Image 1 (cartoon, rainbow, N blue to C red):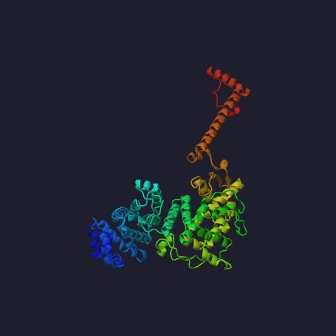
Image 2: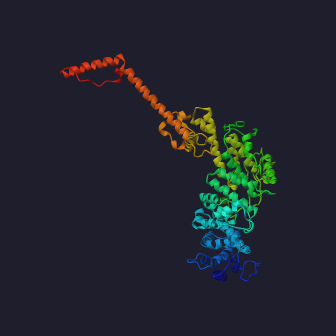
Image 3: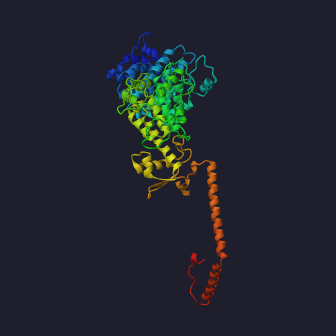
Length: 580
């Protein structure tokens, strides 16, 4: 360990000189991948990389970081070691950036080995980040801005003359997918920095994949857009998430990747949250006892299950067969989730100790009634369950949807989609209430709770209504709120009144949510109300002053005033409206 550190501290040191001191690059690293197993060596290693001021040559530090890459990828490092490694990457980011610039320049194109070392460091960074249990710890290491700096380095190859590339390089950006992009999105996803990731992706969009400098595989391409899709879900941008998942489905391929299957599952759920209510009541039911059997597949549900037209034939055949082969499945009470050796969901990865994505297949199937769907679910990895969820969601059959989610909960948790399924359940309640508002002008809270099968009864129904009124246009893309939902609750009678005429008073209007046309219409309506009121007052004044009763009262008051002025009579008493 000390020898490797000394080589890294020499002037002019490079990653190759640190790892291959004899110059024989055909041999394995002279730095033992398991060297950090010894606590003394680990302390010496991290002290050198984190020393202030730095004692290592920047390019030599790259070799020192690349040495134990295998240990962080397939070994069993502790959380403290992983955090220390992330800090070391952040502290020596300048050396990594210099290595990337050197291999992408005209003078350094022959030294592609340096790029391989950088790729090894980035892979080890992703492996270390996955093993960090507390996501805020990743942020504190400073590795995220360091990865963003590496991913922003412009890459220039001999054959690059496209307008997009020139524009990207001239603006200081990088349009070519690199391992740094992948690991950056992975770390942002693990640490919850969704906004930072989306902003970086918008400033540095990926337009090309050129493996000339960095080794980029189809799995890297899929993982990048899969991570981006999950990041967009975390940012409440479901449309962008669907776009990223669709890219995972449309990549040219001859086989179906596990990442493609995972993207298809999330894409189906996101499409349900984004779909618009087109009034298709072919199989609509809000009764709590609906079983979902024998319903005709409506156009809207079929549209949600459609496969992108640009998907490769292999993917189209597989996904199409997954829908048709399990379209009428019935889950049993003892259904179990497929167990995979590695998950695509970062939260599950932490518990399983997995690194990145995997193309491994499921080893145990769901168990279904009758047993005839076991092979299908093993073959299609639970895609049929998601198809049934889509159909139940679009039909509005809350009872059937809950039954599917309950019996497939282990599958949803394993896929990392249980939260999206719960959002769909809330969305079904919103849709059901809107359909009720189209049928009833007034309905009791108790009946709403009964029709929607709400466990909390009237209290949960009231909470649901208040939530729908509060969100108004804020979630217009999610819960079918093309028009703001308006309702008024009568607590005394336990009734709900739907519609604008019952939903609010004038002092409750929030004009910040209106467009100009609505604002002008509301202003016009208020002005008309004021003019009508003024006209009524004027008519009342004319009617009173010209009435015989008013004239007699005025004459009597004049007589009284004369009497009071001469010292007799009583003072004038206040008059009431009834006298006129």
